[in-house]
Image (cartoon, rainbow, N blue to C red):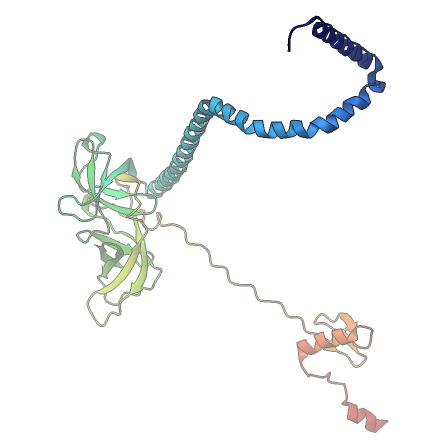
Length: 353
C-alpha cells in the first residue's frame, strides 16, 4: 500500500478513536460502554488464543528444559551424593551401635570373672600356620600380648593366642579340630575335655563315664597351670546332645558354643588372670521358669428352695428367678447331675401329693 495523504489521515483517525475508547473505558469502570464488545471479542478469540498457546507451550518447555538441564543435572547429582552419604552414615551408626553392645557385654564378662583384658579388633580371618580356624587381631607384643593367652568376647570363649607379632597376633579359635580345652560342668563340677569340630558342636569327653548330663547343662573352662593357655570360669557352651555311656570309662556329649565364630569383631585378650576361680559367676543368668497359675474353680450348691449357694455360704442366685435357666446351667456345669441331699426326685414328690 502506497503512503498517500489519505492513508496517513486514516491512521491518525484510528489512533484518535483508540485513545478515545481507552479513555471512555477507564472512566466507565465496571459500567464501561465497551465492556460488551470486550466480552464478545473474548468469546471469539479466546479459543484461538488457547489453541495457539497449547501449540507453542511444548516448544517453550523444550527450550526451558534445555536451558535448565545443566542446573537439574547438578541438583540430581547433589541429591545422589547426599543420599549415599546418608546411607553410609546410617550403616556406620548401625555398626557402631553393634560394636558398643559387644564391648559392653565383654566388659561385663571381664568384670564378673575379674579378668584383666586388652581389647582388640578382628582384622582378618583364614588359615594360618596349618590351622584351619584362625583370626588375626590388631594387638601384638607392643600391646602386652603373649603366646598362649586366653581370648574371649561378650559371649564366651573365643580361643587362644598362637603367634604374636609386634602389632598383630593370630588366634586359634575354639572350634578348630586342633583345639582342646579343659571344661567343668556347672553345679556338678564334672570335668572333661572339649575339642573343636569346625561348624559342628564341640565334642566333650567327660572323665566320669557315669556322669549325669542332660541337654541344657552349661560348661565353663576349668583353667590351666599358671592360667596359660586358659583362665578358669570362661563360658564355653551348652549341652545339646548326650551319647549313651554304654559302660565306657568316659562319656561323650556335644556342646553348642556360646560364641559365633563366623561373626567375630571385638575380642578381649586376658592379660591378667583372676586371683580366685570365678566358678560359674560369668555364665549368663538363666531365665526363671514360672509355673502356670491354676484356674480357680467355684462350687455352687442348689438348695431345696432353689437358692444357689457358693462355697462360702453366700447366696449367688436362685434357679426359680428370671434368668434362672442360665444360673441353673452354670450350676449344672459345676456339679454335674448331683442333687442336694434333702431334695426328692420328682416322682416321689408326685406320689406324696
